[in-house]
View 1 (cartoon, rainbow, N blue to C red):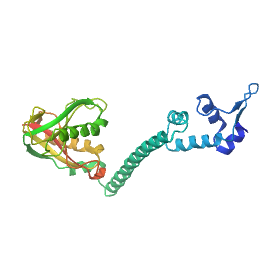
View 2: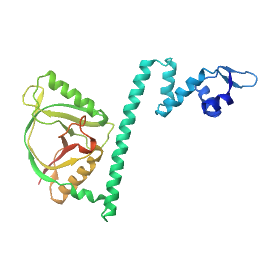
View 3: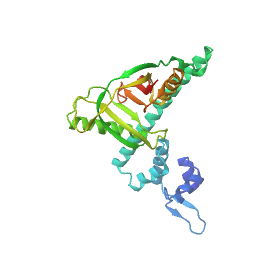
View 4: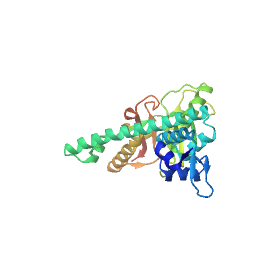
Length: 266
């Protein structure tokens, strides 16, 4: 058996942390002297503390680690949870990679003596007549993070209903303000067949802009559209919508192409 000091030296985990793990039932010592309160650990527990350290490196929470340990290190559960962490870390790496690219572009802009937000002037806005569309759609009050799930559900309906898409998918934002956790969204796809499940979206005059880049930067296109609408003397008469020209599942974030529309009138 190893004293808490020796166990701490070998595992390179502080005694304070080991005591905390004991308190939360994450890793309890093999034996605790009742009179002195000294904790002692079995040599076999070194493997457990090393597993805990590794999972912490993978950004597992202590609660998640506890679930793994309580399952007696069930291999299927461990594989599932590590796979999920891999996806999460990959997403974060992609996010920071995009940030690094944006930082590099901003530094280049500043080195050229330009204003940091001067890129907004490069976003072109046009006036266009959007034709009438027959669409199959799903409308829900939802978290914007669920968009991909809702889109998959919509295309499942397209396939099971033998509909023929006639254009790329789109999102219509019906909420009067921005609440990403609870927003009124409609996911739609134009289809050829007209049935009781489809609806006609009438033609409308729109201020329109094409945005290229990660979806997190769509606010730039929105801001420029609003500015243009006001400067040109138009008035917004409907809810904005986006049409996705590229598939985010197969397109790098920096190459996403989204057409943004704001219905307007003079």
